[in-house]
Amino acid sequence: MSTGSHRQRHRLVAGLTFATFVLTMAAAPAAAATPAAPASRTVDAAPDSDGAGRFRPEPRATLGLTTIKSGFVSPVMLTHAGDSRLFVVEQPGRIRILRPPHGSVTTWTIDATPYLDIQGLVQYSGEEGLLGLAFHPGYAENGRFFLYYTNNAGNNVVALGRRTSFNRGELIRTILPIFHPTYGNHNGGMINFGPDGNLYIGTGDGGGTGNPTNTAQNTTSLLGKILRIDVTGTSTYTVPPSNPWANDSNPNRRLVWSYGLRNPWRWSFDRADGKMWIADVGEDRWEEVNRAGTGEAVNYGWRVMEGRACYNPSSGCNTSGKKRPHAVYANSGSHCAVTGGYVYRGSLYPSLVGRYIFADFCSGYIWNISATGPELSSLPAAYSSGRSISGFGESSSGEVYVTDIGGVVLRVRD
Image (cartoon, rainbow, N blue to C red; front, side, top):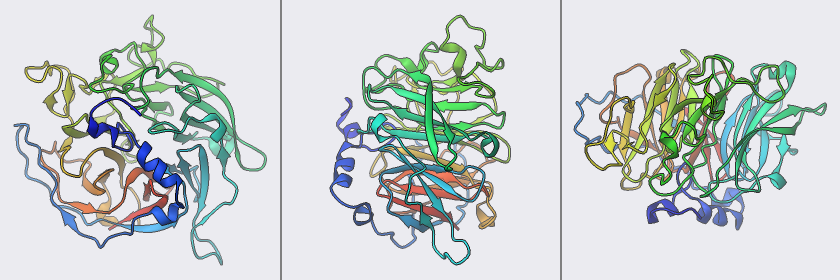
């Protein structure tokens, strides 16, 4: 169990510890532990009260959830490999294939054989485990994919895998170790290919209350960062020459794309314009969403700032050169940790097109905001899902899905 405040010790993902919930899940089948979906309703979100300029809250687009399939074990994200299948990442160390209805099969089905099972290599405890999966853009031809997981030494690694002749996956080698020596929380875990073809890697600050070692602001540390590497045509990786410190003498700094993050548990690229959306889990006051744009060497402020407020020092902090979040909400009441999602670019629900969808893990509230609107000082009303939303995912057609840590995959609808 990670150190930190009492509040932190009872959180789940992305800056929270979820040992208690995991133990509960281990004692009962996933389906039995899954909460029933409540009727759709909206609730007011906590406003931003940091004194910044006020914007009129935008109208809320309608939003809801449709259950697709239950029976997973601690799912934390899903993705696609360029076809109709969804690949669901289970934190203990498996990747399951979820297939849509086809022909005479009228329901979604889970393949009996996992795409990949590396449970023996994964340290699954609290926030640790198999946390990320990204298929190479050329997967159909080269069969390559990449994982982010916590190994049995308690460190995080980015590893290369490949498709076998049986159309399943196998692990090949670690390509990037990310040492995580002190605490078990704040591991990050999201990896994804950007529109430039490079692999982006989100890392947490290494844990502990207030980032005691200040790794997030230290550009020679791999923790509290978005890293960027080129994995094209190599068995490991190379440093993209356009990285901000590509020619630095420090090998860690060469990999850094942006910094000043506490625990960017889930983030994504908008497939329409390539902009990056980063949801960074707060300490105990503010949860934040960053609309990153396409620039590099961005400092998101942690641990100097939490959201738009000073953290260390608690007042009079130096905000120069630090990017303000696009949106924040108070870490109060039932809120505890932001789970980043996607800008909706699907075709099933036109009213959601161009809306960034994200959630809070503990409250189950889901918001959607304009991807092109101004900085927000308060959020629109939220959909109360009654779910423990551990992650989002996107299909090859741009539809957005949700993973509930209790074992369910759902699709976002209007």
